[in-house]
Image (cartoon, rainbow, N blue to C red; front, side, top):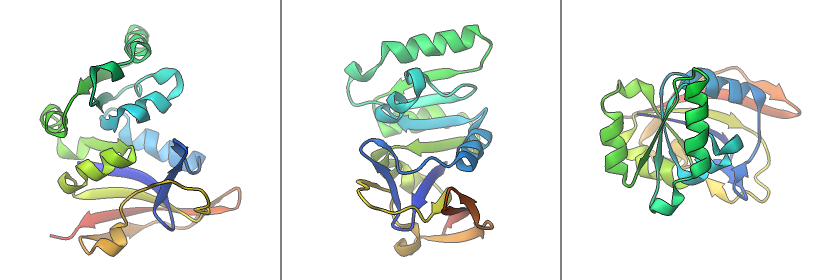
Length: 180
């Protein structure tokens, strides 16, 4: 499995239930990288999408802790997308082990953990790769963080892209691999 995330210099990812910053190139990278793949997420992440719709042309595995978190809107959006010809699938699971079992029928490099913070933490031990977009957006008010891979001693950066700019924020695409 691979975790894919956008973090700032303090490894902050969010503020008040929203992404800390929306960088179009990062969103494009996310779409292109995960299209046709499996995405594991929490229910809050699914609910943050427009129409609470699962991601199109992906298998969406959503970890819930309560049946009440199954959203009619998400099921209806999945049905509408499938009727429109998209290969979208929505699967609700109750435990991380059930998510892993559902995902293990796919190549491990086709399975992406996409958040939120608690889901990232739950699945990090099962991942060997993290695709991290680093940005220098201020941490002010951030309340959600990704584990600091650089400080953990368990990970090393194996790729670091060239710095890019978006509205005064510098960002770069990086790859971390678990140290064996």
